[in-house]
Length: 396
Image 1 (tube, one colour):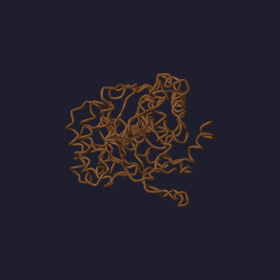
Image 2 (tube, helix red, strand yellow; image 1 turned 180 degrees about the vertical axis):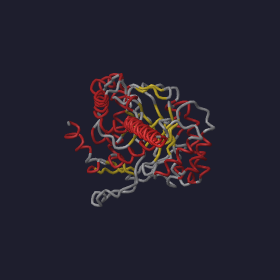
Image 3 (cartoon, helix red, strand yellow; image 1 turned 135 degrees about the vertical axis):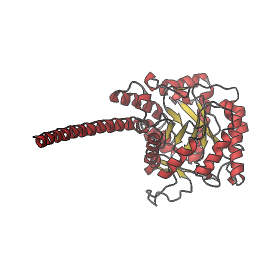
Image 4 (tube, helix red, strand yellow; image 1 turned 135 degrees about the horizontal axis):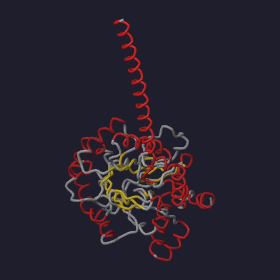
């Protein structure tokens, strides 16, 4: 309440990108010194064994992560564990340094609890990131989001694939897992690798990187249902361990034109992505029989929002916009709330809740089938009995 009543109104009068830069500056500063880290930990930290999971050999103390797109220059790895984050995805990182799209490139939509993002993959490039990460160890898992440099040259498919490959190969020793971002709506050339054919070409090249670390594909929320089947079919042929669902949405149909006045191009984060993301998580979970790990992103503002994604099929969740609107206390609040929700539903560990909505449906389907079979058996027995009586009457 302190943040929402006093701090946020002040911050929301300042240019959004400037506030973002301030958050990075102070996050880096507080993370640099042991006393300040422990001071932050005192107020923001929360741990509970119920939230721990091991996924693909990686231990996560809780399922809440900072999504890619916030820590573009890799400055927050020391402070984030102190405010109860269980992991972070840095980047998106590209082969070449990228200044991003022209300013302004961030806008707020308070009524929709959304941020319009048009950064355009701003980052210092994979060489600079490699120097920062080389030989470093952190207190939680680090994922690296890999994209292609936002420039005219990488619109060429072959050049774009080489761009992805260069970044992935260079940074492979430094991340705990990797996300191949094929869904940024703000880069030159659109989303060519979200198509099945080009995604297949990209993953074929990336299969050549020697790694035993988990690889995820980050998808757009605006996918059509037929694209889900195509994407799964492609990923089944490659070294893909899961999906990050989802990125920003380009859909603005449900937003009043007055609210969009002065708002530039870009994708929408936050609440407008919530239902789109949840629907896709459910589709991918059901259609893959849970053989892929799913990371749920989009519209998480409470423990309930996170739990929805987990029950829909997500093993991990990530957020940015919720923290901007609710404050850094949100992460601790979500983790505490998840423990209460798990206890209420009778789960001993967070992993038991993953996909629970569909497991219940499956059990109901099984019960229905068993009931149907029992009815059929009774009818068959009755028919058999009737036939026997008829035969006996004939014989008589």
